Length: 233
Length: 240
Image 1 (cartoon, rainbow over the protein chains, first blue to last red):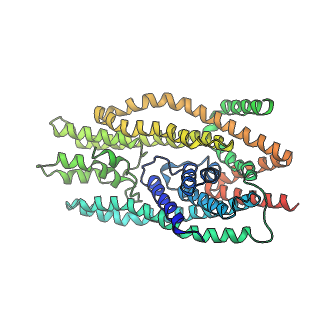
Image 2: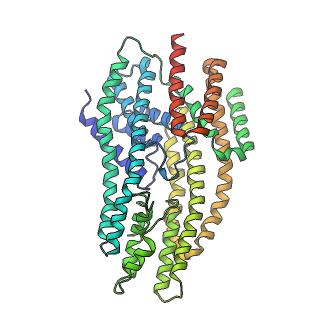
Image 3: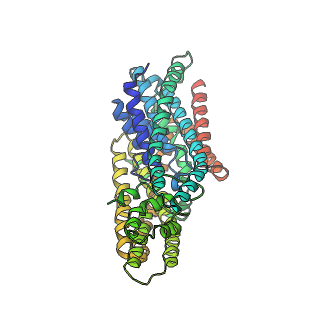
């Protein structure tokens, strides 16, 4: 069992990162690479947290966050992945032989939580129109405090959403992952194997970006320079 | 100061009907309250500004500053048409949306995140710190600095902001491509060193698959499919 002394601080972090992501505060602490590191720091394993957060980040390198409407809920995905990986790894006392399998499950739970957030906020985007119309009517009648109250209360909502999702998913994900890593058939290997294979997805997402079409020279230059340094030095 | 913290909550209540209209009005509310004190013009401000608004949240600070400045000038007796202020806001929001989204979302984020990811691949802790410093330098420069520029220069803010922006933007577009090239090279060479042509060949297939999927579906779907395909490939390799 994992104690609430570990889950609560991580859930509070998740809530805070949701505020950063959804309110346009945009300090970018909510990016999985930062969220993963922060989660790791809270749980006492900064590098493991960073490893999990970075894997999520790398897969979504070509993601365009144009006002955040159609993107996966990456802050939650990063924190869930990092927290589950670190917690299970602590339970297994750093057993490297199942680290890859633990990470795959942690990423799976992270991505699932991200999908949930995406759907929830898509629904909210349409449902909040009613509340907005109500607030506009009240403002026309001179009652501006409705507008201020609703606007500020959304900060609390974003925070609570992140907090509750993490509070719900961490205990479940932790048990599921522990169950699968203790079964007779296990995928063996360290996290390094995922750092070999998953970045290919990031390359695919980056190459699909439109701006690279007009910057072929610089792209090829980067490829060649890096290849020369890695192969000959 | 009462307006500055509100600039950071612009997208709090995004919705289909007004988009960020509530956030825009909420940011300017202290200014409007001050201007309408004693003359009861708040209803005019509500009619003019509590409506649809959609622009880049960071560059929006310039627009908020510009609108506040124009309204203050009008209130102090200058002959400025209210409809002209509103149309200036709409024009600025379109321009700033295109420029701001391109600069922050298409160029700056992929550039800084790719650099940070490369650092982490090689086990260097401070990748996220570099990312945060680099990104937030421009973030605060345009968010807080942009607001004051808008306040000082009114509707001319567009030229003042976009002048320096265009110079950086051109350089950074090339930098994104260069860093993407470095990242691609690193990923393929590491793949080849790990498992020879089998892994590098799988990488080519996966990259092509993600690009193909991305043409038809969102990045979410492409990444999830790529993730499961990769896990399957790793399992098959182990079983064999």
